[in-house]
Amino acid sequence: MNTAKVLSRSSLKALASIFPGDALSLRPEEMLIYGTDAGKKFSMPWAVVRPERTEQVQELMALAQKERIPVIPRARGTNVVSACVPDQGGVVLSCLRMNKVLSIDPRSFTACVQPGVITHDLQKKVRSLGLYYPPDPASMKVSTIGGNIATNAGGMSAVKYGVTRDYVLGLEAVLPGGEIIRTGGRVHKNVVGLDLTRLFTGSEGGLGIIVKAWLKLLPAPEYSASILACFEDEVMALEGVSRIFESGILPCAMEFLPGEIMKCLAGYGPVPWPEDAGACLIIRVDGSVDGTRHQTERIRQSLQNTLYLDVAGQEDEERIWEMRRLINPASFSLGPDKVSDDVVVPRGVVLDAVQGIRAIARKYALNILAFGHIGDGNIHVNYMHDASQPGSGQRVDQARQEVLSLVLELEGSISGEHGVGLSKKPFLTRQVGPRELEIMRSIKKVFDPYNILNPGKGI
Ligand SMILES: Cc1cc2nc3c(=O)[nH]c(=O)nc-3n(C[C@H](O)[C@H](O)[C@H](O)COP(=O)(O)OP(=O)(O)OC[C@H]3O[C@@H](n4cnc5c(N)ncnc54)[C@H](O)[C@@H]3O)c2cc1C
Image (tube, rainbow, N blue to C red):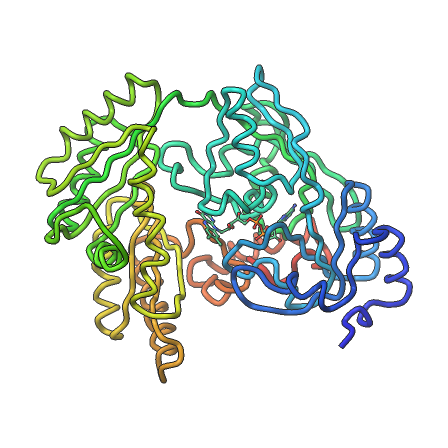
């Protein structure tokens, strides 16, 4: 089917004039990839456009509003909740050609960037000037600043440095209809009016197209070091977390690996810990060279009863983090298919959450891995299974429902990083009350009265 036929002749003509040459795709073979993202759902777009200039975005949004054409903003498509799948049809707007770092101001500690800049590229650029942009989603070598803002992406360093939201000072966005708004500014503090910048951050492309962002930078830490600490069991590991915080140290990253994960890793390749280790922590600290040494020493002193402890300086700390990176490939030994959630609970009840998830795994005879960003209570829950086995998918669905109930009972949240998109939409009302949802939808209506911008995602 030629999906471009869904658009009227006049709309197609207007699109071709706004987006000349290869800035417009209408052929299915060119559009196929824009129908999906890392959430793996698929729906063919009606057209794909690739603006280079804000004026093109404005003209598109004016046309879209007039003709009621859905517009789906998209960057690298690494979101895992189908947040840029055009499930209601429409025009996919790829932001990847708006990819310039417009300015870096070392004296004001700010950068101004277009949305399609790859996060890691910006990080490298500012590092070369002695500056630091901390948000570090694991996808940072491919995902973009625009995508990170629209999902409020977090990363390992969130324990100390916070998430994307904490570094977005201001935005320029094009609204449905084509109007431009500017929120916030270049200043590190700003309390004038309602905080529209925060409203946009995490809005999953539903309020406006971000075309420019002013970001906050920090001085780059001089040095870092990492620690791998292994314990007999997870209670000891989690007690270790409390002792580190009690000692006054705020690590920049702190990951928790329970016994199941360590077994997967041991089956995948050589591991440094003794066989009887039942849980481990991977911790990173940063600061000045002396400060880092001091922090690692304090952590070493506060972690008693370790079965194995390894400290590595910046020069070779990656060997410790390699264990964390191998979790994903190693976990497929437990099942060829994976469904993943990224729940969050208050830090003090992580053990209850992990043990509760394990009980649910036993009840449904499933391999469920629960691990991750212990420093912020953000637990990755991976349901490893074989979808070709009868009843397997159903058991995963039931177990997921129970895990989410457990998380909500513990006053947690069903997503800490990945967002809602299409995938988590069925669970939304379990966490957000009817009145709150009504308020959120009324806000969306102010920006997007005809619901043409990424319709159906998030709220
Ligand atoms: C291997 C892997 C690891 C990951 N690790 C992490 C992690 O550690 N932490 C984390 O938070 N996430 C993680 N993710 C999820 C994903 O990388 C993030 O959600 C990321 O922020 C998406 O960026 P993107 O550039 O790919 O955006 P996309 O996936 O293309 O888009 C994401 C959302 O942003 C909207 N959008 C994109 N650009 C704009 C714009 N200019 N204006 C308005 N809306 C826009 C889209 O409509 C969509 O709703 C991971 C994903 C993978 C595949």
